[in-house]
Amino acid sequence: MNKHIKKFAFAVSFLAFLFTGGCTDDILPEITTLDVDRLFSPTDLDARVVNQTSVRLTWKKVNKADFYNVEFFENANEDFSGAPERAVNGVLFEDLPLVVAGFAGETTYSVRVQAVGEGIDESKWISTTFTTDAEQILFPIDPEEITASGVTLRWPAGEFATHITLMPGDINRPVTADEVAEGVAVITGLQSETEYTAKLMNEDKTRGTMVFTTLIDIGDAILVNPGDDLKAIVEAAQPGDAFALMPGEYVIEGNIEIYTNLSIIGARPYDKPEVLGAVFRMKDGSALRLKDLILDGATSPDGNQLVIYDEVGTYGDLIIEDCVIKNNVKGVIYGSVAALVEYVLVKGTIIANVECVGGDFIDFRSGMPKALDFINNTVYNSALNRDLFRLDNATAYSGDYTVLVNIESNTFYNIISTDGTTRRVLYIRLASHEITVKKNIFAQVLGNYSNQSATTVVEMSSNNYHNADNLFSPEFTVYDSGNYTTYNPSFVDPANGNFTVTNEELIIFRIGDPRWLP
Image (cartoon, rainbow, N blue to C red; front, side, top):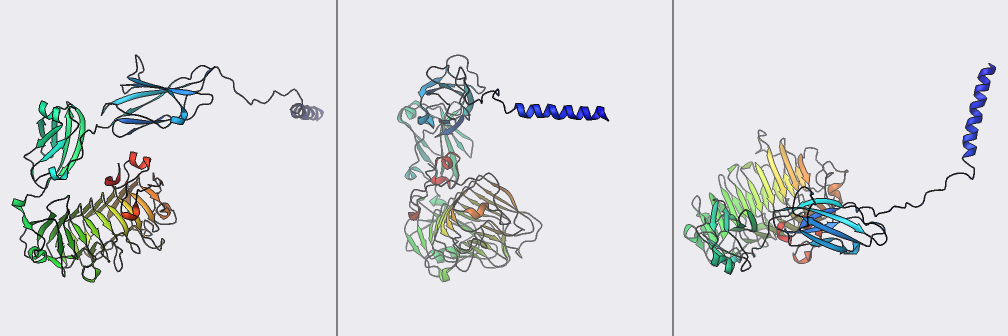
C-alpha cells in the first residue's frame, strides 16, 4: 500500500512541477517575425488565354517584393533552359492582371514568375503552362459579300497564309501570292443555305476562323415580295417548297395554316423582312422552318402563340433560326393536342416582350417533341408570369423513348418576374427525359428551376446567375448545386436590348449568347 501511495505522490509532484514551471520567466520568447535570407515565391499563379493569342496573368502578392520578373518559353513541359522566348521585367503588383499579347496561335508556352526586392535575394521561380487559341486575323464578313454560292474573306494585307479550308465538304483551297498581298480571297462553288466554317491557314496553324451561312438560292426558291399575299402563297405550298422573302413588311390577317413541309426564309439576312401578326397553325404531317425573319405578334389573332399544333398526329421538324420574335401575348410554341413532333430547334434567335398571359413560353401539354434544342438565343422581358419550358405529362408521349432537352449558351434577362415559388424555368415531368442546362446567363429571374420531383436534369454546369437566387436555392426540388457563378454581366444597355457583356470572367469562359461576347 505504501509503495503505491509513494508512486502516486511522485506523479502528482512531477505534474505540478510541469504546470508551475510553465509560468516562470524562463519561457522562450514568442515568435512574432520570421527572418529569411530570400523572398518567398509568388503563389496562385494563374494564366488565362484571352483574345485568342494573349495571356492574362495573376498571382498573390509577396511581402517585401518591389517588383516581379516574368519569362515565357515556347514549350509545354516547364523547361526553362536557355534564353526565354520573351521576358517582362519590373512588373509592379499594382499592374496586375498582366496581359501580354502577340503569342503564336495554337501553341503551348511555359511561364514563370519571380519576386524581387531591395536588400534581399530574389525568390525562387513559380511556373505554369498555357495554350493559346487559334489566331483570328480574319475581318468580320460583310453580309453583302455572302451569296448563295460563295463568300469573300478579308484579312490584313500582307499577312501570310498558305490555304483556306471550308467545312462541310472538306474543301482545301490554296491562297495565291496576290491574295496574300491584298488580304482578299473570293470563294465560289459553295452550296446554298449551308452553314460553313472557313479557316485561313498557315501550314498547320489557324490564322483566322469565320462561320457564315450562304444565302437561299432564289433560283431554287419561290421569291416573295412585299405586297404579295404571303398567307395565300404559303397555304398553297407543295411539299419541300422554300419561300424567299425580300426585305419589307408582310401584314398577315388571320392564321397561316401549314399543311406540308416548307421553309420561309429571309432572302437577305442583313435586312430581315418583317412578318406582322402571323400565327402558324400546324396540321397533321407538316413541318416548318423559319429563318432570318422578324416575326412581330403584336397584331396576331387573339394574341396567340407564334406556332400552334392544331391536330392530333405526327409532325416533322420545327426549326427557328436567326429570327427576331416579339410581342406575342400568349407564348412562342403551343401544343395542347396529342401532336408528336420529331424535333424542335430554336437557335440564334432574339425573343422579346413575349409576356405569356394565358400560356407558357414553350408550352407542350398534350403534345410533345422527341427532342428540343434551345441554343444561342437571347430572351428578355418574357415569360413574366408563367413557366419557361413546359413539357407536361403529354398524351402524345408513349414513354418508350427518352425526350432530350438541351438549353445551352443563352442569355435570359427579366424572365419569371413574379411569384418565385411556383413559376419554373423547367416544368418538365415526363416518365423518361434528360435535361442539359449549361453556359447560360440568367439575370433578373425570380422563378425557380423546378419544384417537381419528376424533373430530371443530367447536366447543369457553367451557368451564371445574377439576381436569380432561386436557381441555386436548395429550397426547391431542382436547383443548381454545381459549378455556377454569380457575376454581374454588366450588360451595356439591357433596357434597349443591348446585352453585350463587359464582365471579364464571363467573356473569358464564353458564358451566354455568343453574339454578346466580345
